Length: 198
Image (cartoon, rainbow, N blue to C red):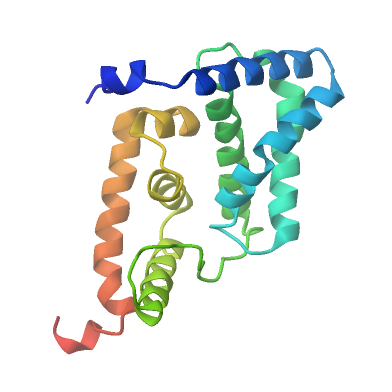
């Protein structure tokens, strides 16, 4: 499915300016400018912390992964070729660092997050739903979980996720499909309904 040309042409001027500013900062980083690296760090820290907060609530682990990400940005800034947005390139690095930490078991599982709004007007029901979904996500493979988080929590398109994960869109779709199937099969068990014949 090709991107919507209308959506592409309606990218606000401010977003294009941010892209150009980020590219200029990254160029300065590639020239060894530590102030430019600090500026990128300040700009992306919150977004990366939000992404990582879906995997662990330990602030020290979040900071460690973010620092590892920016160490790689410092080392590899000269390899950026403007073929993607800086934000996508940087998120791709964070994605790979996160997967490595998940595979090594150095990111302890996050307890249920309570930062979702508008799921339901009943707080208890919302808490139960969030707890249920979060438990399901922890049972996915690191690749499947990261793709689901990027799509449904952070709002990235399939094309952006493919760039971040450095894989074809078809691979992203396959991971999402298998994640959904696994979640569908897990949900009755997680909700305590497995023995109820539902």
